[in-house]
Amino acid sequence: MRYGKKNKNRERCKRMSKSFEDLLAKVAKCSKKTVSVACAQDKPVLEAVKAAKEKGIADAILVGDEAEIRKIAAELDMNLDEYEIINEPDSIQAAHKAVELVHNNKADMYMKGIIDTKNFLKSVLDKEVGLRTGKPLSHVAVFEVPGVDRLLYLSDVAFMTYPSLEDKKAIIENTVKVVHACGIPCPKVAPLAAVEVVNPKMPVTVDAAELTKMNENGEITGCIVDGPLSLDLAIDPEAAVHKGVTNPVAGHADILLFPNIDAGNITYKILVRTAKVKIGNVLVGTSAPVVLTSRSDDFETKLNSIALATVIAGSITD
Image (cartoon, rainbow, N blue to C red; front, side, top):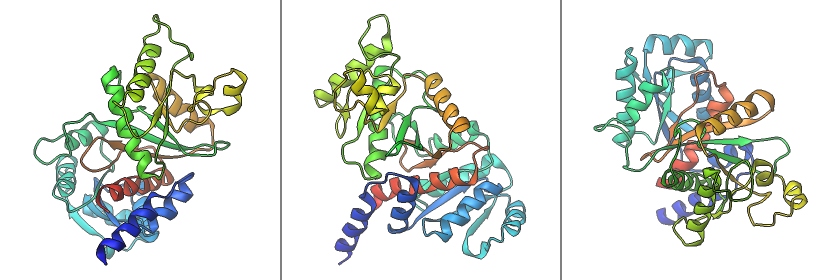
C-alpha cells in the first residue's frame, strides 16, 4: 500500500507545470517537505515561510536570531508554535547549523535568509556539513512571462561565471533535472548566441554546435538540444518561421542556456525590472535543492522558490 501511495504522489508531482499557479497547486498534493532557513530573521523570508506552511507546501526550521524572528513574526501574526526555532544570532554559525540539518536529512531543502551570498555559499560548499556532490553547481531561474505559454528555465544567470564547454554540459544536465521535476519529460534546450549560424570567430556558436552534437550522440540525454539560436528564435515561433528555422527547439525552447553570466544576468534583470514576471530561483548540482534568492527579492519570489525547491526535493525522495 505504501508503495502504491508513493507512486500516486510521484505521478501527481510530475504533472506539467505551465505557470507558478500550476506549480503551487501541484506541490500542495505532494508529500510535504521541510526547508531549513539560515538567518531567518527577515520579513519577506518569514512571509514566504508562513505562506508555504499555510498552503501545505513546506514546513520550516528557522535558524537565526530568535528574538528578531519573534519580533518580525508578531508583525506578521505568525504562530511560531508551529515551527522549530534554533537560536543562533551569529550569521556564520546560523548558516552552519541550518545546512547541517539538510546534510543530516533532518530537512529537505536549504534556504538563504538575511545573510550575504558569499557566506551562505560557503556553508553550501562546507566539506563536513555542506551539500557538495562532486558535480558542478549551477543556478536556475524559472520565469513565468506574460505572453509565453510555458515556464522558461534560464541558466546560468547568477553562479557560474564563464562556463567552459564541459561546464555548459553540466548546466544543461542540472537544469534538465529541474525541468523533469516540473513535469516536462523531454525539455527543449536552446544554447543561446547572437546568431543562429556557426561562426568560428564566435566561440559561443561553436560551443552551441558542440552541445547539439553531444545531444545527438547520447552524451547529453533527457532533452533535445539545438543551437546556436538567438533569443528571439528560441522562444518566438513566428520569428522562427519568418527566418525559416525549422529545428524542433526553435520557437519552443524550455531551457535557455546563456553563454556567460553577463548575458544571463543582464537578461534576468531586464525581465525583472521591465516586465510583470513571476520568478523562482534555485541552486542545483547539490545533494538537496538550495533556495538562493536575493535579499531584495519580494515575498512572492521567495514563495515561488520554495515551491520550486519542494518539487525538486519531491523528485528525489518521493
